[in-house]
Length: 253
Image 1 (spheres, helix red, strand yellow):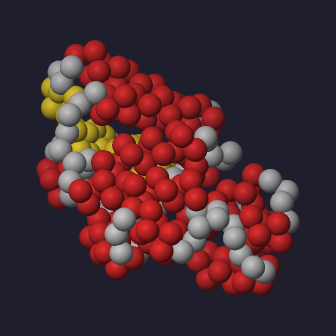
Image 2 (tube, helix red, strand yellow):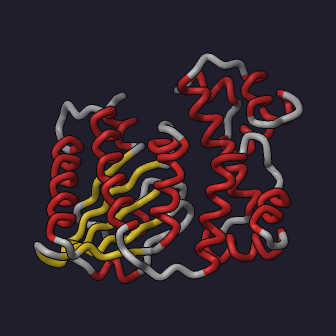
Image 3 (cartoon, rainbow, N blue to C red):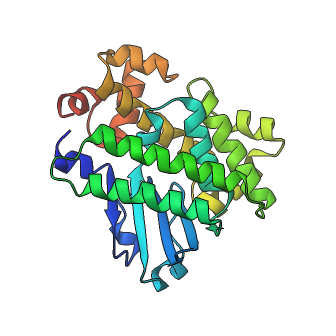
């Protein structure tokens, strides 16, 4: 993967001044605020959200920002754990010396690889995964407040990652969670600024792009894999969201 393409997937920003610096609204971000050698405040930006203003007060932090397909390329359990990491809590604090040191070490390796002229996409992706797995472990070890709406958002995202190929209607997810479609959409709009259907469509597009780039599957096969009744309906859906047809997207990627 070229340097340009690689840096469209992941970036490390030393002086993070505004949300306009993010790769895209569909990207995920972690801001590490290094308070001292024994304390790191970690802020999360889930999909379709932005960082709060308090993040930009810090002058000693570092942003790690990446597109969601870096996690979608791995197994489903890992993807769900990452979604949980980003959606349970907006931030958490590391104060245990061993945890702080470990995170600093992995960030150092990630930065070194990112700024290397011969940086490897596989190495960057692997180091990012190591960093995320450490954060998942540390977050699970900490007792943090989680409101009911956050739980429902995570439950929806967890269900969607498992069922989006077969269940594309909001009714399925609302019924499984035990609330109305209207209430589900209210919660999702409040937390993610998107409706259930918009999030499902976004996930379908991400999966379609991934499959088109990574395999030789035909447009017809992909359409049915994603639950569309016909190739034409899938092609219209893809072009509406991406701007070009599936075949043109494959040619250019």
